Every structure is written in C-alpha cells, then in structure tokens.
Amino acid sequence: MPGLISLVRSHVGASSEDFAVGENARIRIQGLANSQAIRYVPTKKWKRCFMYMPQYAQRSCVPRMMSIMLLAFLLLASPVFGQQTYVTQFDAYSGFAYLDSPHVSLSEPGWAAQVGFRPKTWYSVGFDYSLSAGDLTLTPNLLPTALQQQLGAELGGLAAAGQIPPTYKLAVQAHSRTQTFAVGPQLAYRHFKQVTLFLRPVFAGAIHETATPQPADPIATLIVGQLVPAGHKTDTAPFIGFGGGFDILFGKHFALRTQCDLVYDHLFNDILQDGRFTTRFSIGPAFNFGKNIAEPTK
Image (cartoon, rainbow, N blue to C red; front, side, top):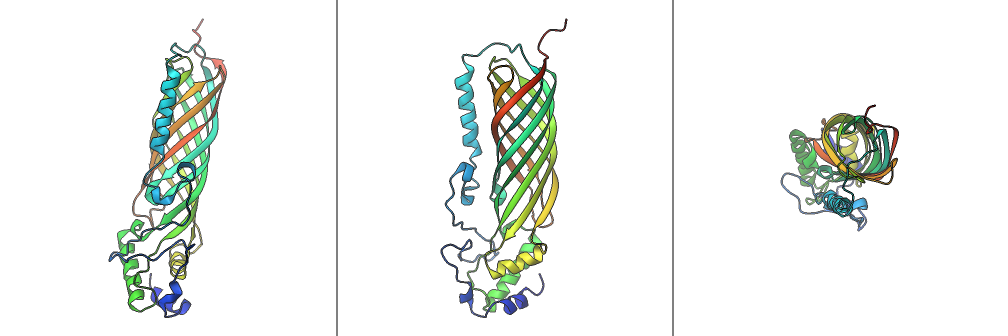
C-alpha cells in the first residue's frame, strides 16, 4: 500500500494522542506484536448462541444445539417404534437459520427454505436456500502473507515516525449479508413412526456474500479505502458440505424439522488467505404433500 505514511500525515496530526480511543471504541490499543498481528477487543456484550459474542466465536454454540437435538430425539423415539406407512412425494420447509463461521468471527442469524422430491421413501433430492446477516472482524493475520508483511512494514514506519502510537492495533469490523444456494440428495430412515432421521451425505452449491467494512479510526479508514475502494465487497464462491437432522411428525402433512450442516468455502480469496468452515443450524416447520408413495403398488 504505497503512500500510506504520507496519506496518514496529510489526514492526522503528528501527535499519537490523536489516536486515543474511548470506552465505546471498537478498537483498543493493546501491546504491539512484531508481526503486527491484531487481536480484536469487542465492546458489546452480546448474548451467547443466537446473539453471541465475537470473542467467543471459536467456542461455537452448534455442539450445544446438536446435544439438544440428540436429547430431544432420545426422549421422543422410545414410544414411537413402527414403520411409517404414509410418506408423501414432496416436502417443503421454512424456518430459522443460524450461520457460524468462527475463522472470521462471523455469526449470522437468518432464514432458510427447502423443497424436496422423493422418488422413493428412503431418498429424495432437493434445493436449499438461506439468507442471513451479521458482523465479522477482519484482522491482518487473515490476509495473504505478502500483504501482512507490507501492512506490518507500513504500520511500523508510521509508529517510528510518531504518526501512530507504537502500541496501535488494527482491526476492522464489517457487516455481512450472505445468501446460499445448494442442491443434493438426502437419505431417510423411517423406522420410527413419528420421527424421521435423515442424512445429506454430500451437497454442493454457491455462497454469495456482501461485506461492508466499518472502520473505527483514521488509519483503518485509509487502509480500507485502499483495499476496498468501493466501500463494500461482494463475492460468490462454490462450496461443498454435508449434514443431517430429524423430523418430528405431527400427522401426515406436518413436522418440526431440526437440522445442522457443515460446508467449506473460500470467499474473497484475493484478500483472505484461507478458506473457512461454516456451520448452519436450522429449525422450523416442514410440510409434506403429494401422493402417498409408501403404499404398495397395485
């Protein structure tokens, strides 16, 4: 990023006191690492899980959700043994979704929808869509190595010139809006009369994301202006994943669906060094319709 030092000098005073930050700032000055790697210090105390704190992003709430799913199944399965005799040819789903991408400290509550066609009682093919939004944190250690080194040298030069405090740390929060599109097969186990277990052994699709950086100080604003001159960045990338869950059946045409999927993608590969794993938890009503394909052929 050529000219960063001169840009800084033209926008801010020579005193490092100009970068003093208050209690509500999103970036606090911590001890400066030689590599210029940055640690994000959040300021909002969000609730865990559905409104969870970015600093706990590595401690995903998904395992807890999966435990709840398993417990609910064990409690419900024991009295409902018996082969299902009514299986419709089509199904549809719409419900709450929660995406968790801990590598970039991104959590996104949103909505998911699915439609499926069952050629047989034990398998189906379907389409899946989700829309979600949330906040993520970008730090220099997420960037490609060459860009990390260039940014570290620039920040070191600014510190040596007295333009920023030697303890200055850079982290940029961004707002993300994400859409996913996926297709794939699903295998179903219908040994229980009122519970259907299902597995998605593999599915593929595309993820479309728009990220809008929200720099909190003049240095971050200048750097974001060079990396993302449009003020926002949009990318679409393929992904592959797997998942599963269960339906609790309430009659022939209505069910409560609980599911969890894991996918891998590499969005923004021009400025992000690594790809990321994203877990999606979703729960909501499912609707079964069409002819009964479980009936024996006459």
